[in-house]
Amino acid sequence: MFSTASRSLLCCSHAKGPHRALASILTKSPALDTPSLQCRDYHEVTGNIICPNVVRGIDHLRDPRLNKGLAFTLEERQALGIHGLLAAKFKTQEEQLDICRISIDRYEDNLNKYLYLVELQDRNEKLFFRLLSENIEKYLPIVYTPTVGLACQRFGLIYRRPRGLFITINDKGHIFNILKNWPEPDVRAIVFTDGERILGLGDLGAYGMGIPVGKLSLYTALAGIKPHQCLPITLDVGTDNQDLLEDPLYIGLRQKRVRGKEYDEFIDEFMEACVQRYGQNTLLQFEDFALINAGRLLKKYRHKYCTFNDDIQGTAAVAVAGLMAAVRVTKRKLSENIYLFLGAGSAANGIANLTVAAMVAEGLSEKQARERVYMFDVDGLLSTRREGGVPEHAKSFGKDIEPEKDFEACVAKIKPSCLIGCSTVGGAFTTNVLQQMARNTDRPVIFALSNPTSKAECTAQAAYDNTEGRCIFASGSPFPPVKYNGKEFHTGQGNNSYIFPGVALGVIATATHHIPETMFLTAARTLAHYVSEEDLAIGRIYPSLAELKEVSVAIAIEVAKMAYDEGLGSVYPIPRNFSMHIRRCQYEFNYVVNLPDRYTWPESAKVDYKRSRGHLHPCNT
Ligand SMILES: NC(=O)C1=CN([C@@H]2O[C@H](COP(=O)(O)OP(=O)(O)OC[C@H]3O[C@@H](n4cnc5c(N)ncnc54)[C@H](OP(=O)(O)O)[C@@H]3O)[C@@H](O)[C@H]2O)C=CC1
Ligand SMILES: CC(=O)C(=O)O
Ligand SMILES: [Mg+2]
Image 1 (cartoon, rainbow, N blue to C red):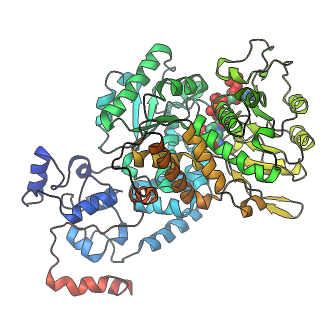
Image 2 (spheres, rainbow, N blue to C red):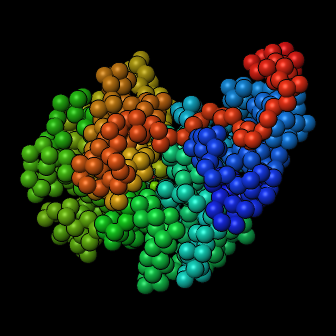
Image 3 (cartoon, rainbow, N blue to C red):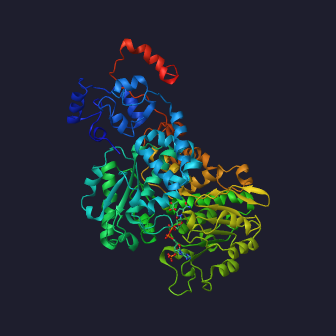
């Protein structure tokens, strides 16, 4: 991913100590006291620790952060010493984007499209992120759910080049040193998993790396967080997935998961090492941890670190935003609904708790709000009377009612108006369940949030077909448009990707030191406000995916304001204009001019250079 030059060298004007001297020798120029304007701009815009003064010509083609392919101008090609290493043609970034789109369309198989995009990211980072950010509806299902799930399952086969860090349990005691091997010094956000609950696919061990990589792609593509500020990490403590332990292609530790004290000490050391290496405000996002760890680790660290659990809190915010938008259709306040969750794990508890907070904000007491929420897990309805009682993690949603193990019967008995699936059980919302929802209420809300598509509790089409087209539907993975009664509906994607990029941008831009639960309610309200009447008219309780970038910035601005209202932000002076401040922190998706600052263009070549601009150069005519 990084060239040798980019790994080891700083620009002469930014290097310190021996690096500065070395950089200065390499550029054959005296060390400068102040960075030149161009260098400073270059660092600001690209976020690179390297600058064109010190890298070798070929590195501009090999380093994905510098490479522009045929978009290097004649001036750049000559100045950087890459003239002749490229074909004569000059291309604009727009022309390159067209080629990317054509190339991807040539693949029928989504995994091949995924591989093309991985390769593009490894080759030309700006092109990759611009392509993704300008074609979200088309490529989100490739770099993210559902295709990323398949990529994780085949990770041993498709693994080519390192992206992110693998830290294993054997590294315990040395985690800080491993972090030092990461070549970027300015990391602001780390997304990490231990691979035990990858989407709804279960324990994929080290194959889970596709998830933090995919999530961080969205940090940049959707929220414009600079790629060099993002670090994906897999914590490899083994796997209990027997198939993987026997898979000759498996690339992780071939041992059962380490649990208990040793695991906890490992996570403790990891959290400490991250802030030691990158600073106290480093955002640490837990992703796809199993139920036994997710909630308790969040509780343990939420007030000590700048951290959140995306599956609990990000998911909660997106689901509550959907419920808020649905109020405009159902005309039922949040506090007038009865909620039934299939699944009582991380996502279900996160959503349920935030829904309770939203109902309390509408005027219910917490007790009254909790009474409206029911959960059903692998052992049936969460009844205090059932054998084994209610699991600790969902205690507050247990009810003193008759136990029930039949989900269909439960839907008939409890008569929920909102049915929310976070169970990892594909097809669990059967025809009978859906038809019962249509009998329960005029406009039933049905969320099939489990990912990837194969794990969704029902399809969008099934939800419409079995509720006479009266349901309000959302799913974690995308579904194609639904046709019902001669009308076409475009249902929304209730996925935490509407939330985490914006929250992360707001948190990073203000160097917030920890993230309170109320920030997710704020994010939910901001998202719900973005839903237009046009969205609702076509069956969507979320803005279109094409608006995700705008939504992320809006969430970031609200998060930033809240950070200062609550005394959590630590960027001073306090930005006067949050919108401007947020936008200033964002990545530049367009190419920037890439010339050494002491390069003097020979007089004789100036005419050629002028001709090479625009389309005047002979090669472009
Ligand atoms: N749309 C989105 O943005 C998001 C979607 N998700 C998806 O939600 C799903 C669940 O994630 P998460 O909550 O973190 O996972 P957890 O493992 O924490 O929870 C899963 C829950 O489902 C229950 N369950 C499993 N099988 C059944 C069954 N046959 N009948 C009833 N309940 C069952 C489990 O019960 P028990 O514990 O008793 O086994 C557990 O309560 C995943 O598919 C994930 O991809 C997650 C986060 C975000
Ligand atoms: C979307 C997500 O975070 C999940 O399915 O786990
Ligand atoms: Mg997740």
